[in-house]
Amino acid sequence: MIATWPFGKEAVDVGAQAMRDGGTALDGVEQGIRRIEFLSSDGSVGLGGRPNAAGYAQLDACIMNGPNHGGGSVAGMEGIVHPITAARRVMEKTKHVMLVGEGARWFALEQGLKTVDVAKHADLKKKWVERQRDPEPGERGHDTIALLVLDANGDIAGGCSTSGAGGKLPGRVGDAPILGAGLYVDNTVGAAGATGLGENVMRHCASVMIVELMRQGMHPQAACEEVIHRIAARDPLGYDLHVCFIALDKSGRFGAAASSQRFPFAVGTGEKTEIHHVAQVTPR
Ligand code: ASP
Image (tube, protein in one colour):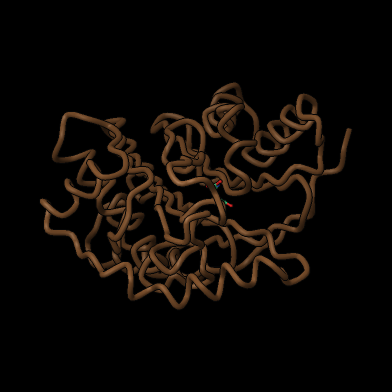
């Protein structure tokens, strides 16, 4: 299992436990991400995440199941505690892949998913909006939990969830709920997930590109780095843009890369989970 950022360790541990309890890779993904959504642990995932320019959280999430190449996602959804579960229900209970905004919320409510009174989060949001006027040095204002799982049968599943870029325009959708951008799973090859500024990821369909490079024989590490080089070559910001990737292949090899910062991520074998760091990719 591999997951983005230090909170990925918690997601990996919870996901591994779900699988030890008899769950599938998909259950591991859902349970691991639910934990981070519940904790809203660094204010970038779930309802405790970063509010948009109008002061409230609009959440994005996506899930993919390798064995049947299933996919489901929700975008710009308000007031639902577990967007990853809403995404899984879209995949499993509808004939669609993606629901957005109020439609996603109605569907989640109809599915009996937990909701909260968004007004109760007003204090948190007010504090965050105030902090943006005088941001802490290094504060980036976005982050995603992306979690990729390879199970003992060789099946792969993946998911991601985020409140997206803080201060985004209401209605802005990032890369996380876009299959092939923030997440992609191909059960015959591997999976990739992204974090960083979604606009820089989705314009390049980065996750599907990483998986396709692995299909051609690249190690997950080389594939993640190659996609950063390709994006940097085209973007006016070059390597200064902010994108980070994780990838896992069918044989359990993994990789991660980041364009402009050290990127901590978590890797778990089911028995132990460790935080790894990758240095930023050096321009070639
Ligand atoms: N990719 C997310 C977005 O742009 C945020 C992040 O992962 O930093 O919505």
